[in-house]
Length: 454
Ligand code: 2HG
Ligand code: ZN
Image 1 (cartoon, rainbow, N blue to C red):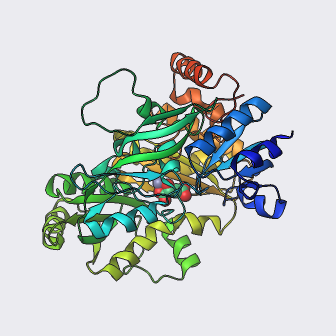
Image 2 (image 1 turned 120 degrees about the vertical axis):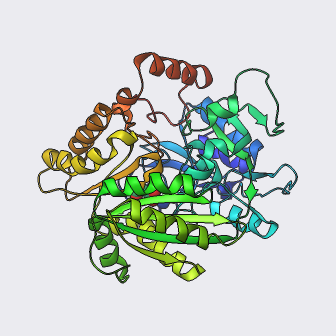
Image 3 (image 1 turned 90 degrees about the horizontal axis):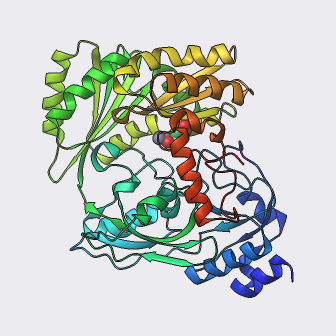
């Protein structure tokens, strides 16, 4: 029997997609930088189905690419050619919320928005949030150890995962959903699978930590004369504001692009070098605390030249739009080289200054748009106007490594950065990681070509 026939027998014919007009959307990412052909797309409904799919694919010697919301930016969930794409979309259950422990078990295919909508009426919230929330799935968030806009307060996805359930390459189920607060019985397999980008197992469900919902929010957009002033402002705001939740940076050229694309009005008079969007969230209205802190910080940071505050939901959303619309606005101007790097704080100002020149030296005439999560030194370096993705990546990532930064802060290695892994990881580390991969997936069934070069 063919693999497709075996798969149909195991999980039902209608969950094995082969019609090219249906499979097409699974075969490229939305930026269209990664395109490949899938042998078929399977949509298992539960852990047993996933076990059957992996057993059959292992037996037939066919590789599997797991795909959640397909919002990744490094090609980690797009087939290269001939793989089976395993879509988690049918694993969409949200279990009962345990309000005492503040935990809930959710299927891998649950979107971030669906989780938020389920828990917020109960007075609880989730610690990770970002612009792709409507499509990005919890399984994908765990696989990539997603970061986003709230890391300053809650950490990355790794800090939200208290347990998970997964299937190994040979089809064996692995369940760590009990999530006891104290549990010290050997290797941390949950931690190992978090951030493993679909290379070690297929995650089917996740038990996540929830936080008290902080219903009162205030946003401020700060205009700065230099990027250094943005760093100074953040350094002064942090110790003054226990309610600080986000500190997002964008620059004049990014704002211009966003305004062009969205038609949004200028957020304030004049044009400024840098903009820092901060958000405070608390049980009581944080506006007064934020305004007081901003008043003090304005006298301490001369480069802070203007501030717009958004207190009601509408103006908060409008201010966030300037930041969150960066990705779509950049994409509307061509297919960018997308790099996601972390720079040590001591080198950030210099990096913000030098990065456009580094990219332009590799690709003359290229236009570099930088924005990101300032608190973590996480810069999204997007380079437009060049088809030399390889040359620009090489130059930028080598430069980042020379500053002792990381070549991937939050998007992962995927297929996009495998050749540069050694810029961030030592030979010993890579050898240890490869040994783990080989031990858990000796047949190279799961996401071959992701994280490691073939
Ligand atoms: C964000 O922070 C995402 O908005 C996307 O990580 C970054 O488009 C990008 O480069
Ligand atoms: Zn980001």
